[in-house]
Length: 227
Image (tube, rainbow, N blue to C red; front, side, top):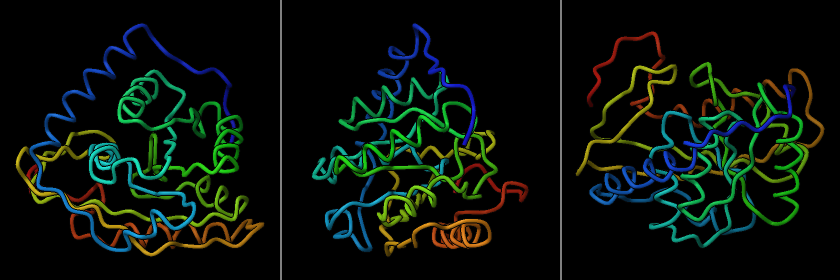
């Protein structure tokens, strides 16, 4: 991980973040929500939650109002201006944040995540964020698990009806009153001291765990904007 150590923020970052929180909350309260799968794994020791970047519209709401903050969670957001806005949204939902990415403040952000885990906090990471490629796991989440000994917990999010933004990740916004399902998958332990081919192997395993979802299609394939 590399990049400069500057955390970027503008005067509008927090006000915009509060507005986004309000809009997300208004939509999410209309949704029919359920949590399935290995739900107990969220509460049995620490974990590093992994969610695709284009599905982050609802997880913070789930954390605050469905899981009800029963575990302490910290979310990795980029050190960019957009990351500052997203950090405000996460804080409004009662989550902690770490700022950094492979492009900026990578080393510092990684060290901060290690410190969060050492303090007993769970981490939430988008393994293909913040700039993609879509549905491709960056090695950071696997390195973090390998160094800390804390397993990765893949989380899939399924939407029955949604709008897709024409961004690099085709960001998903659920339509009001549709159904959203948060599926907790089996934890993925990662051996210590992974490097090279072994690191790439576990990246592919995480991609496979998150990709078992018929709404997840490669970016280049044509898809309707609504499901």
